[in-house]
Amino acid sequence: MSPVRLVFLMVACSALAAPLAGHAAPTSTLASADACSGRMTLTERRITEHAGNGMPALIGYVHLTQPIYQVSVDEAVAMVDAQRANRQTCAVASAR
Image (tube, rainbow, N blue to C red; front, side):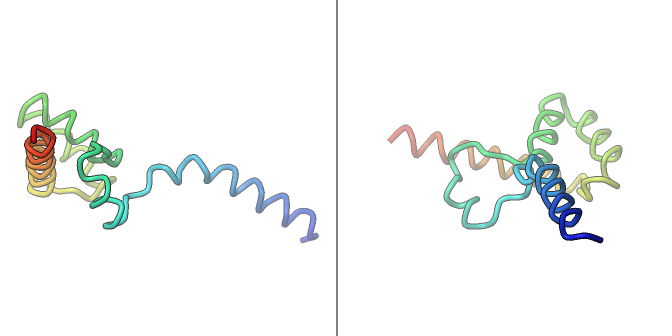
């Protein structure tokens, strides 16, 4: 392959991959720094939305997307509980 084609291929791959970089899971340092900012990954956001519709909706969604997200019902419930506890902690901290 010629060097021009390689450069073109590299630029095209980086341009196509750039929008996906924003959906990566946050690192532990970012997660602790943004604890009260309300930032969630795409998976956490969708699970939280379905949890708002009730437990049957959450269970159905988790079973439907389990091959994709690799999240069990127990993990989803723990994720929602952790988010609610985080919101409560942030509300108490902001009330001071």
